[in-house]
Amino acid sequence: MATIAHAKNMQPSRSSAGEALATVGVALLLFASVYAAILVAPEERTMGLIQRIFYFHVPFGWSAFIAFFINFVASIAYLRSRAPKWDWLAVSSAEVGVPFVTVMLVTGPIWAHPVWGIWWTWDARLTSTFVLWVLYVCYLLLRTLIDEPERRAVVSAVFAIFAAFDIPLVYFSIWFFRTQHPQPVIGAGGSLDPRMLDVLLLAWSATLALLALLLVQRYRLEAMRWELDHLRLNLDRPGPEPQRFAAVGNKGGSA
Amino acid sequence: MALARPIGILLAKELRTEFRTRELLATTLVFVLIVLVLFSFTFDPTSVESRRFGPGLLWLALLFAGSLMLHPSFTREQSNDTLVALRMAPIEPVAIIAAKILANFCFLLLAEILLLPVFAALYNLHILPVLGRLVAVLVLGTLAICIVGTVFAAISSQARMRELLLPLLLLPLLTPALIASAEATAGLFEEQPALAPVWIGVLAAFDTIFLTVTWLFGDYLLEE
Image (cartoon, rainbow over all chains, first blue to last red; front, top):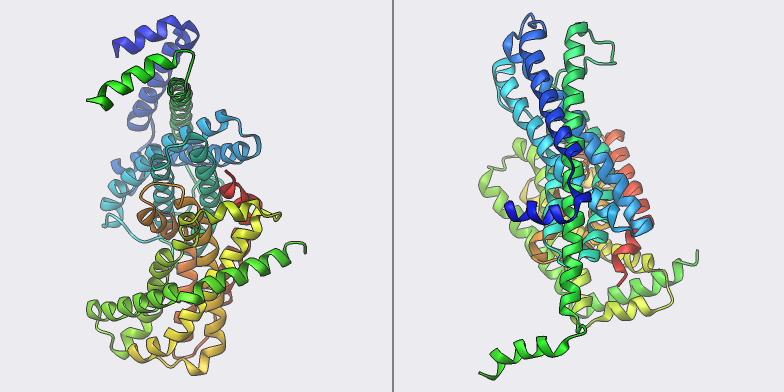
């Protein structure tokens, strides 16, 4: 950690006080939404305490969908422009989106067990979210299995586009199977206490800020990796001092 | 329709390569047969239950078969570097993928038609009265498997662990096609056989969407 920090100091543009401030800000926002969810939001009449998990379950889900949408747009932009930055954005958004969906998939059953009496049911939303999670885990897995950076970027962008078009089809087809998930309470004529809505929006802004923070950090990491890869490639190529590399290679070979 | 001629020529080439050895067709047939027999050990296929489980099992077997048999469509070309030759030809790269999709579609559909009587006999289902509608579902479902499967074979052929990777990428993406095909097929074996329009719609939408996506983005996979 110390050496990385040291290396960063040599390139002052890469780290700043603003970044530390942003991190503290996101942490405070997250803390405030935990506080609001537990102490400010009114108790739900039938479900009681466990309903408060909703203030994390829903915002993480919404933010994850935004992350995957960014992934989709970045993948198309990469194929069209071939600018590496779009690939960095694509991988960053998928890598942040997957843990966000994981939060949704973990908090869901914790809520469902006392309320529905079961941990999991093969309902449209649950199943399609699970398929969504699997698709993007496969996307990340695919990326680890291709070494050549440009090939990896192209191939994974095509897969990401297929995955994005698959999601509505998955949802639609499972929806026709059966559905048990509580219907959306926002925007669909449902009734949500205004204070509950405030807390929900606060929590959503916190997860969005977290998403943005992680995305920026991950994007920077990817940019640095790319730079490192290119430095390595240039090192392998016969450079201005081919003699030195040849000598190192011969030492082992002649023995 | 400048694409039709190269696609036709490439399709003929794919079919000729396969029918010289028939190895893809033979292994697919035996594989699906084994899976169908193995399923009968995990469930007891009495006539009532087989009506409920049979169609799902058939499509699951076809899906697994597809994820294995589609894999050689690009690795076959790699072993002799013939893909380079195809790319150098003055044709749209998408024609290469389209011809491979069509060829795989022919192979898998042929295997299915050969297996259908065996499936009906093993699971005690009456297929003759619904044969026309069943073939329609098979055509749409098989097309879904082959479109995505062929494109993903091109993806996995460029990665490590390719044999494992193809089913991994393919199976979750085919979820809607599996549900729709299995449900549509199950509807044909009810007391009152009926083809639910919604599942045909899902399959047709799946095929159309992914054919379009392949047409738009598929050629990126073949560039060097």
